[in-house]
Length: 279
Image (cartoon, rainbow, N blue to C red):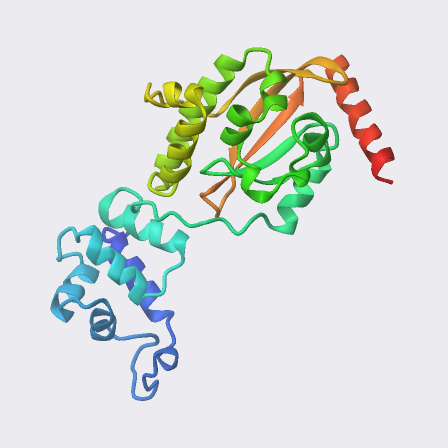
């Protein structure tokens, strides 16, 4: 029967340390009784006391600070997932978010979007820039490909694009939801500073945005019902669900499923018309 490990943090640190190749750090791999780096080598890389690091592996060092954990994570060349696991073991919480600008979606994720033939789907960043979409989204929501990249932002579209505004059956409700969910997403991703310039610009060009922004409302974006007024097929309804993209905390995918068979038929007609036009 396996024995429970009463020092999971120490075991994890030791495991990561022994999996490192000394040669990758310009260190000799000869005359080593065990694989990987020595404790004092990790301590030196992390700029901590070798004695204290030894105690940490042995479960005698007490709770380290977040700053020290960051240095240890860098010293051990931990991935983002490994870094998060280290913080959970040591402090019982994930590390502070480090916002990173998204480089877009992988071809695999784009194929997922494209497989949803009659369900509009988009991928957006924490700052609500749309970075990927499928054919149904281009036909039903917005032809993002026809817009300059800097204009593919949901807040800019809702507040500054007359066509998008006219397509909302209840624009005020939609606008308030978008601002509140955007505020929550940007803060959660550590992007509050990055969006400051865009917020300032929108406050300047849109009195509606300024008034709603100053309400300081915050909402989640898990799912709900969206109703549109499309210029070709008329009123149409969707259920939408939002999903996190694993491994890319800045990205979220939103899928819109037609509410009724008639709504699905309308999307199908638009997609087929778009295909015929482009071919």
